[in-house]
Length: 139
Image 1 (cartoon, helix red, strand yellow):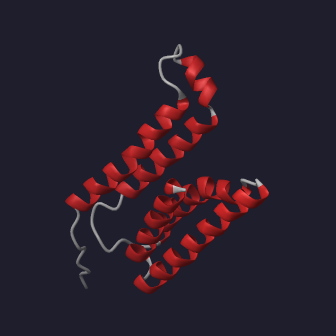
Image 2 (cartoon, helix red, strand yellow):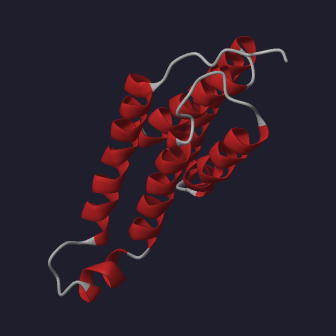
């Protein structure tokens, strides 16, 4: 649940930065509601399909938003790095036992997943530390 809420918050933050503040806040509340509905469905029906959508959806939408909408700030390429770490964490989660056997049982894919997920806020914090407002110039 915490991962879904944090990913939805990051996605909404990107929508606020790239698209519009009102759209981003609307996106935040609607996606948080959808997270709660998916958790309730998982608990009642023992069906993880809605929860699994949050594993795939952000890895497609975040790079698409970064590519399609112009940034208002500098250092926006860090969003690509964050999306890459998130995608890598999803791959490591899916191949947990394979990763564990390939590295001679030193560290599991699940542990590497958490390390990659920890890199996402680190990368975005560095982005926030380095960036400034991009000034539009008319030539």
